[in-house]
Image 1 (cartoon, rainbow, N blue to C red):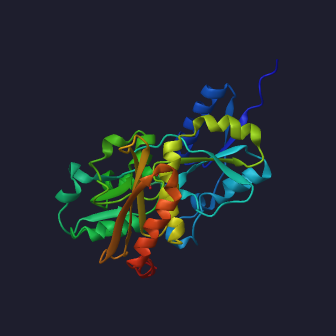
Image 2: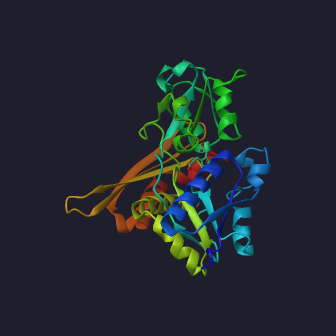
Image 3: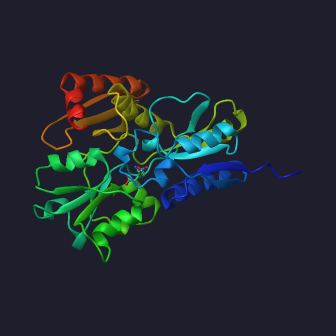
Length: 313
Ligand SMILES: NCc1[nH]cc(CCC(=O)O)c1CC(=O)O
């Protein structure tokens, strides 16, 4: 008997992308016995040093991986789900949404400080308009500074020998995957800073007509995470917003009174200067995830979300 041909998993070459891709490769091999090899794909988002919001929209980290899937040079690709544009792509399918990391944002500050302990005027770095807006809206007098770069570069801005900032805010999930959780000085409560839609989740994408790979990958799917992410991303879609809009959404599942899965979704839209914002929540049966997201987005639009997003540009 010959060994099955290895699956080729397309991945960005950043440390974060490599650890999450290796994690998926190992899980797939463990579940199926099929070997998986990583294929490095360089994306425009990796090559450019411009601010993400200046790079011309969504998908800067994704396009090259999708081209490799279409071209057949890779069989599957692992994305940070929050980097995936909401528009469906012809010929490609998210075949699995694996178990999610903690979706909250994390503060990495000098001297072990928490958000509340940072003195007014402290310089706090983040690249995401959503985080900038929410940090400003806290009213702590923080000086929010746009930054870019990979996780280690950003952490060095607060902790390195040449640190020029008092703190940075990053996704806790990325720090967890890179084994850097010890640098976290505070995990931000969603009451204060609500995470990005799909933060902490991965999307495993493959060709829609590739039944073999789809079936192999399906063992990694976590339906509860899939429902939460569907609700969060439905908010983004209904607001016609991309990953660079100051839109946050976070869904949790709990057991309802009748024992069925109940989804609790929160979302917010915040003006980039932090001067104003709308925030709401909705709950309902988990199978209605997308509808719940749409309804919550409609409520936020009624309350001025479109005007708030326009201020941000
Ligand atoms: N936009 C970059 C990006 N895409 C995914 C993550 C972290 C991991 C995740 O959210 O799954 C990050 C870094 C960050 O926001 O700090």
